[in-house]
Length: 440
Image (cartoon, rainbow, N blue to C red; front, side):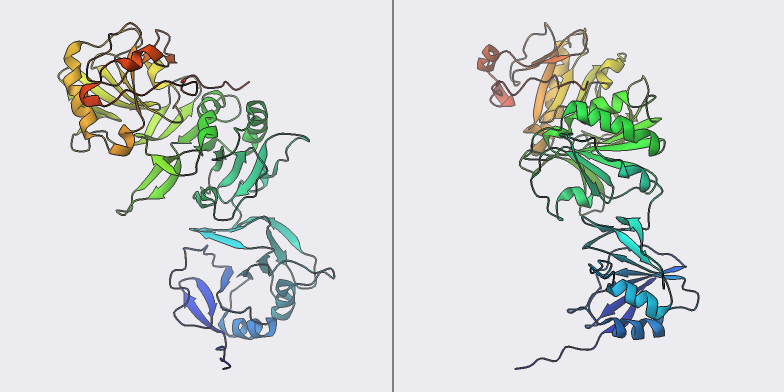
């Protein structure tokens, strides 16, 4: 039986005009860009309406002061061999510039992004003007168009937030989580690594980012994605003062909890969310240790005594650092620990300083700390003790922290030590060493 398709109508949703054939459509419309001079028109019909129908609808709905139309309709700006497309026809018939995409569109709060394509402006009687993949165009849009050198093993994929730097030529789906990283209109975000793919080449990575950084403003944002994301720490420590004033590092890909709080989660090589580091965001400046910007309290019910620091017991503090948690004497202060990079698969729990073995009295407090950590963090936790410290009974076999603040994996023979309440000690394998490949 023939079913009649309702004629398209226009509904207003805030500052957006929504073309629909069902009045309930578009109720979950994201926060799309608002501009008093540019009217955003989102086409959400079951079938693409004819240009004449769109023109008639818009003639009646556009405000008198409208200077241009931003048409959110996949492929409306993709021209045929003669240079024609729906957006050009609409521009000529309305007598207004029409900005349209040449491919599918991803809508994020405040940003419209064209996957594997870009936006084009069609002015009545004039040639099309390329606008780049993001609308409205952030100030840094042109800065992230730097091409790769010929033969580079690095792959650069545009995403709404900036660029995704990775290796491998496997097809990329438009629903990959890298495309959902929220853009910052003031800063370029570089997502580094790709789960299930080879690590990005260190030489190509540093050369590309160093060449890109001076054009993108005072601060870059680095987001690790999968094991290859471990390079962000060294990039962050080397770029400030070299190419940019500061680098912000996020702990992982962002997500929103049911209570509305944004959290950043480490993604494993299978592309699955693994755990949420206590140090959620840090800022690196030239020379010193990174400054903690956002953190998750290891003891949520206890007050903070300073940024990222809580009291663990008499004379002892637990401090959130980039690589995990540092249990230290209250009077100890060592930026070498704060500069230690994160391990891609481990939440490091350092007890004591590089040259200060912990007193035996601290272990009940450490046990109290461990008993309160979430299960997914405990699964990734690795105890680290200053070199020469006796392995404590009842805790997993520890890695060693050398006097120069380098982390060495546990000796395989130590895996036979009893663990008590701490569970079975983690077995050592060739893939476990903590020192990371250095950037050139």
